[in-house]
Amino acid sequence: MSKAEDELLSDFIRDKVADDLQTGKYDGRVVTRFPPEPNGYLHIGHAKAICLDFGIAEENNGVCHLRFDDTNPEKEDVEYVDSIIEDVHWLGFDWGEHLYYASDYFEKIYDCAVKMIRNGKAYVCELSVDAFKEYRGVPTRPGKLPPGRDRSIEENLDLFGRMRNGEFEDGSYVLRATIDMASPNLHMRDPALYRIKRATHHRTGDTWCIYPTYDFAHGLEDSIERVTHSLCTLEFEVHRPLYDWLLEACEVYRPEQTEFSRLNLTYTVMSKRKLLELVEGQYVSGWDDPRMPTLCGLRRRGYTPESIRRFCRGVGITKVESLTDISLLEHHIKDELNRTANRVLAVMDPVKLVIDNYPEDQVEELEAVNNPEDESAGTRKVPFSRELWIEREDFREEANRKFYRLTPGREVRLRYAYFVTCTGVVKDEAGEIQEVHCTYDPATRGGDAPDGRRVKGTIHWVSAAGGGEVDVRMYDRLFSVERPDDVPESGDFKDNLNPDSLKLLRAKVEPAILDMAPGTRCQFERKGYFFSDPKDSSEGAPVFNQIVPLRDSWAKRAK
RNA sequence: UGCCCGAUGGUGUAAUGGUAGCACGACAGUCUCUGGAACUGUUUGUCUAGGUUCGAGUCCUAGUCGGGCAACCA
Image (cartoon, rainbow, N blue to C red; front, side, top):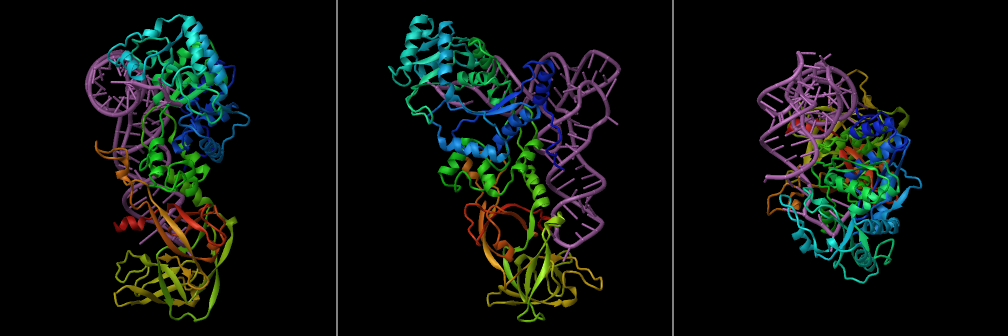
């Protein structure tokens, strides 16, 4: 069983929050924030962070802010802002009025920089990127003091003001914190606070030509919003001393940063850069390609917000770098859809089944159960006639006792219909099977034999008369190996792309399927869970995406 | 080889000095009008070596292995 959503969670961060509440560290306040940079689409790794940030706030009667960390206009865009807002909402979280942008704090951040200069804690540095690299040194050797480090406060103030006024070229000057060029932590070796960058910002336009760096801005953003617990991923661990140092230097309210490990999933990649590469190289149809681990991709695949939330609860929060098996995610969507999705009949790889003793022109309406796990889902009528479609794989000319399906001489049940006994096949000159023939037992109408006789197998079918056809996309994992990133020196992660991650087919379907509205989830019996694509479906012509196949222990046995 | 972080079955996690548990997966079986679901069972684990302790996955020391850090990215 997956952890119910109301079950209390516990992990080292929640323990810490509870502790801080206990000791009154933040006067009983709990304020968290989810701070994405609007430079890409959110993926399932972000979902883990979102569930943590919003979850902790929710559990403690606190608030969680949605804040865009938009300090680098060169990479950011409103397209991403919009998608992030949509995705967080879709996942099921609400930030109320607490929607913020780092860019709204630019003036305040600038003031902090000026204050630091006044206090002798920051200076303007004229070293180029390469030159500073020299001064910074390497981890095993201390760096050297940059030339501008002993500039007077007045001169620094003047220079910094002129940086803002646009008197200097991009890259010619940078504001640095005066910390320690010999620190074993490279981030403490006079990190950059402000850089000159003539780029139009998606919100502030051309108001600014200098922008604060992440290290300088992030802590101040947290401080301004009076965040209590600033949660981020492990790679920021080495930034924490700087986070603390800067806030102390600015003499402002200090939140506390805590790091946890990011989510990695087998058979996919999670880096924004690589996802962008897949989109731009058209290896996928877009950010919302159903094979993508993006939230919009998963949404389009048919995943529900609840299944993703439960998955996130399931993986938990630790500092251990891990690689989570994708089957854990698949388990949660199967578990939910088993309870909620209506069953329907669809034949993916059709071959004709002719019932020789069934009246030529007769069409019956048989009753089928919509969801055996949910009686309230009711029943529906399915047309039945002399000629049906069945799965090609459900028939074998030669079969052993373990094959519970159609083979000459064997009797099986047609789901919700009749028992039929296979009598033979019709092939074309090439030996391809054209038709399978059988006879039916009229006494077994509905699927039960009055004489109590049992059959081992039940197969699904679609009436040739009265049924229809739809497009179906069979999705499989995007990559064929567990760790697509693991490539030899000369290789590329794209070499690991699964060539069969998408297969298009035309399925024979019962009438109910033709009427499905876009965005409907259902189970094609004995096959898998499917979702009528919201984008590509049209009235009377739904297009289906396979969300996840049903477990198939027969296929396993056959291997 | 400087600094920081981590290490529990195949995978993800729990155990906060006191019986190593849960979920997923795998395997076997029961049941079944989905070879689905459900149910039952099985398998597999504390990185190593010392130490503290009546008792160590947990605390200490050393080592091993893995990850991160040298953008004017976040």
